[in-house]
Length: 270
Image (cartoon, rainbow, N blue to C red; front, side, top):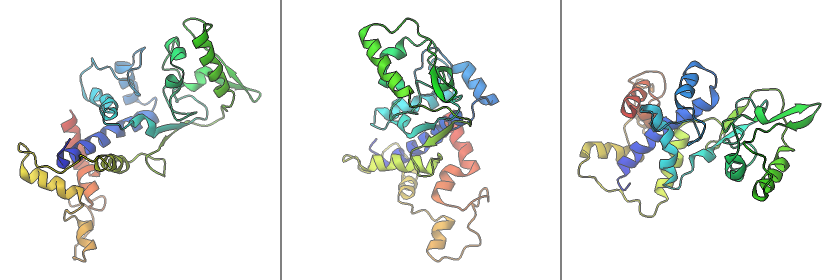
């Protein structure tokens, strides 16, 4: 997208939608999670999170952000990893937990004959007296050559896995803290867009100039927020947001973190 203002708005929207991915990975079993699962779960996974494109609604847009970003060369799935402990919440085939790629991509033939493609690690691996044990559920035995070779590779990986007490933890690779934040993803998307040689700021005729101008100033961090005014030694009564009053008024807070702005973005996504 040539217009930097539109790129900025798209990146904010993607960042907010990705936050729902993070919550889905970390809040398994909650009421809203069970509702999403009941509506969008299917035997054949089409996305990193369960998404039925035939079901209209905001969740379909949330599920589509990964393919949309993949077309731009940004693989969102690789930023989600899992530290496996008891293996009760981590997808065995679909999550990245043993390598830098999901097992479904490393062993596509085995994944094609897996009966339960949404199985978790604990469904396939368990410990007895400190020894890792395995249980499989194939549609047919992986005895032919391509299946057997993949099966040998899978066994080689599984023998080094350790199942231990504790809850699985999702890790966000886009920040050193391991915790997801809208700011970290927005920064990665902005860095990707700025690295493109053909990315030139162009004013779009159908976009109101005042909107494009504000977006341009946001990208450059040139809006007169309380934080920016204080840094320029301008006396301000408070650094708190003038809308919600909960946090410091920064560019990211005004357009992303503020309760009011989040409500606006939710309405736009709907």
